[in-house]
Image 1 (cartoon, rainbow, N blue to C red):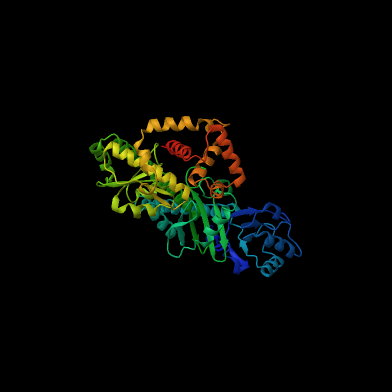
Image 2 (cartoon, rainbow, N blue to C red; image 1 turned 90 degrees about the horizontal axis):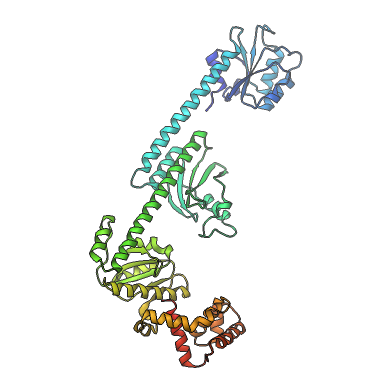
Length: 491
């Protein structure tokens, strides 16, 4: 904090003559002026020095202008233009509450300016020292096992208030005692008003670099986390007092450490996921022991046989990783997990999205590939049911027939039979309409409702399908072949 007028007066032995009740005002600079109205050249919080060369008569307007400008005080140098401070000036300053100091003839104005500069420099050095010390404490906190949570806890102590860590949706992940996050979540919710970004989070184009929220007895700063265009999270710091420049520096340092920890954690997780994907490829190649050897350093292990394969969307991999061996793959379900048979139900229910579950399997390459395919097909059915739906492969009707067919032959049959539809002006709606029609056993209303179209629209599409294929959709044999072709096209 800048020095007070009282500190400057004591250091330079300046005698107060008026306005003693306001000597705690801060002094941010020293100005010298003999103008009748120096206020156009002042910003406020200055100690104005003058010898009163043009002072005479009623000085109340002169003093009023200084008070309105917000000067810290007026220093009057005696022994130049006046042997003593004019009584009119003392009376006007006393009436307006303006601190008035007598500057002895032997005290140069420049000496007062040097003292104020030295005090300001000392204060700035102290602020920098305190900021560096706080940054050191935050850095040590970041190195602790708790990582980001430890930084949040330390930040709360540094700001003399509270701190909180939030995810990209604005949900609180960690907060210190007394954290008042209601205003933060409300503001982030407000920023999400309107179309969200592609990931469902706060849109980057609606978020400034930081947010400052103030209310009675509450001051809050919110900053986004993450090095990309889209925030990967947020953190907030709050206190019952306004934050000083040093505190803002400390908050910015905490933001840098939190972002670094987040990015490092993300990089490590991505590396571990690549290793697990490689382990799965080894298993699919029949190299079980090599797969175990690669997985060992990560502290992971494979479930004992028999196990089941869970298939889910890529966004579910983090949840699956917390309960089982999970990996991201290019062929099959985006995210898969190998789970002990008796734990599969509980793990599947942890996933918010649709989940497909295979039949029990072992580590043989052929068996594992079959289980992955079963999980994929069950997941496709689950996706048609919506989020939170768990479909077990054994519950799917007709899968035994497809399992007896050679996959390459089945796909060739599918491509040939459905070619007239897939070539028809690149209109995928004919294929999807045919699938909905067959899945609903030819019931027009149910199939149209699933597609979100009018039943007359669906009738028109089915008429076009009949013309393109040259087949009668009322023939049970034709329906069976078409169903088989549609299922094989997704294998």
